[in-house]
Length: 581
Image (cartoon, rainbow, N blue to C red):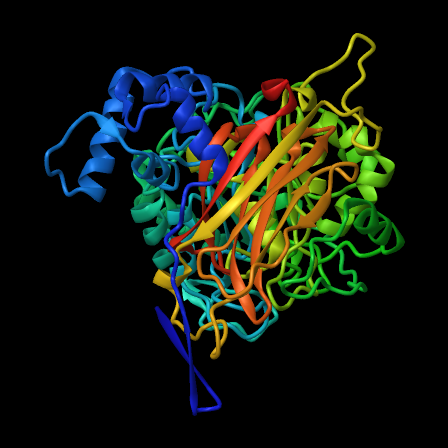
């Protein structure tokens, strides 16, 4: 029983109900147990293969599940290879034993880097907003532990002009030493994933300090550092070939000459707002096509030193740059030309991307089949908010750079996307983005596509809040009133949000509602789930639909900042039309 005080005088008591198996779970248990009260290992294996779609499951997997459940529910006493209905339900509701997506790397990792989306950070050293927060190696370490594979560092001379600071230039952010950041990257680079870490550098240094950077980088990383034999790469190596390697990416020193200053002029997305639709954002970006800058400048624009400093840049520094970067020159069409003899990285602001998507959508796709495209947030996002990442992904952009220290729905999408492929930080791009047709045509992101499949989502129930929250967290007078929002983030035709009814005064709500989502581009769709309470927030998650495992699944929820709750989870069933017809 739970007791709540009302007006400091009266007490209301509410019974806490244990989560009971939904009717569909009972029906599945009866069907696969042959109507008996207990399910054997053989019967559980058949359930895993036929109902859950785990084609590779073996009898040892079924035995392992039963053993884990007996240890948790019965403390190993009188262990038998059998499950009761409650045991079966407990298994289905375990996030570690029955997750919605695979936890292992399962994609081909031997294609060139340009064939993958890469988990990319922006201004990775900032602890908060873009203007007055501290710079530190702590957010870099946190990002690497989350699986982020691309770290950005802005290099500036210190006040004495004899060392290198990392800070957000022309702001009041407090600096951190470059060597501290490099050391932390070395120590934590491969704690979450063995695949390569790309360090993108914004260089505002004189040649003597560039030489010092080269010395620091070489001494810190040693043989971990990837330095190609040829000055220009004709094709990027694969993530597999670059395992446990560090890649340096920046503009060659001569590229910094002649940078322009321009001003930003559009409104920013506020924290926590709904992710803007693709059409709306593209239209807005087209109206503001003159915004090509970050804090009134091109990203990577030094513009702080006389040009003579650039004419004799340190050769050892230039040699470290294995992924050469560049900026827009001569217009979009010129910048997006594919050089058959070398690959490169191009950086665009989110609004430059909007303009390019409207006028050169297929050009972006063609460019990213061989080269890398990095997108970064517009400069007026001073609160470290983010943008809709799907625009970049739809056009093949591998490095959609986000402020990882922020939060909000856009960042939830980023977290969700990179839960795919074992959370290794590299996700194979859909085949249609890499194909060239018989008439040299490529995927057109602005085309209309027919429905490929329909996802059916049954939201049965939720539990775990009373373990992770204080009794009065949501309401001082009664248990919480939860409802769930379920929807799709993807191409405009697929994007939608729906919601369940509200279940009043219940810590373990049972909704038992079904939703259908027709999908035209399921390869780029994310399932969004949010649980709300009239006086609070109950958790969220995003899951890549291409990675969903069908059947009953336990879906773990995360807080606003993307940290996983210890106990909060939903019991959900996923089916595709082709699976259930």
